[in-house]
Length: 119
View (spheres, rainbow, N blue to C red):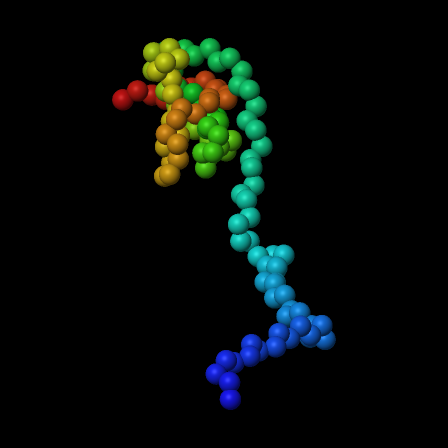
């Protein structure tokens, strides 16, 4: 008897099919997983507004900050005060919950007629 064991013969059978490849099925077409949110239409360029001091206006504004969740969504503001009429004091801030906090672009301004009565 011999103490050395002979190596097991290698089997290379070409008769065995390769194992099947298992792929995950694609998600259903109506599954909203990772669908991008629709992008609102771009906001038109505003006209130059001549602000009168201490005057009430009805305005429309929109945030144009890229990536803001309120980007390009129009806001109607029925009563907006012009302060002293200087642009640095006439601001609308994007301040809805979770928004960017940047200044919005004022698109239109219509002077209220009659002006509200001051108390």
